[in-house]
Length: 191
Image (cartoon, rainbow, N blue to C red; front, side):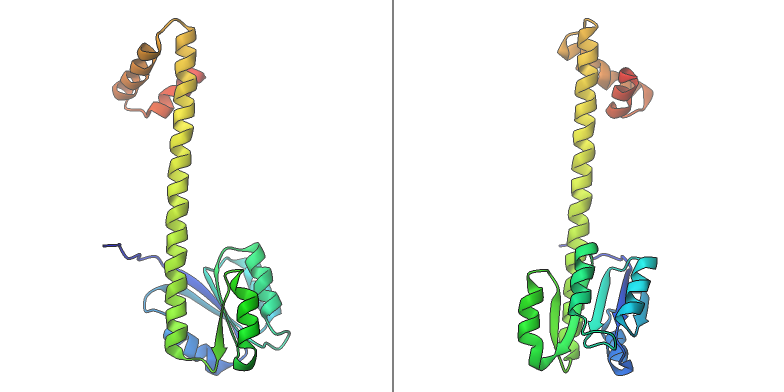
């Protein structure tokens, strides 16, 4: 069974409609968001995105200073975050086709609250999957770096007259005797 994340997320709602903002806040999963910020225009949202990163952005199009599609495409190019844009039903088909390949979710207005809630939950799950994959890649990169350092240290020991097996055993014994990692022992040998 997959473990559920207790991580707290942040969301930026970009909408000039108080009614939309109220609905958006109501559908946010309980306890999942520690930051919920609302801006009424694209320019205000751009300023906000300079000051802090967000996990999700929810845009209610059109806005007072633009429709919003160009804004969400620009955000996608510069940042890794979940993006949902709510658009009038009559343009939904064209806009969703345009944005889907960029990983931006478009939903039609009038908003079906359950649909918005599901899309937000889906984005949170995808964000968690991406973050877990990034953590795995980091662990693999760290392990590869350790293997490279240990190999280089073994080469130094071999050049000093040890066999490969002796060099390997020496590094392991030093790590156990000193309470260090093999990487630390290898770094000491290389210094």
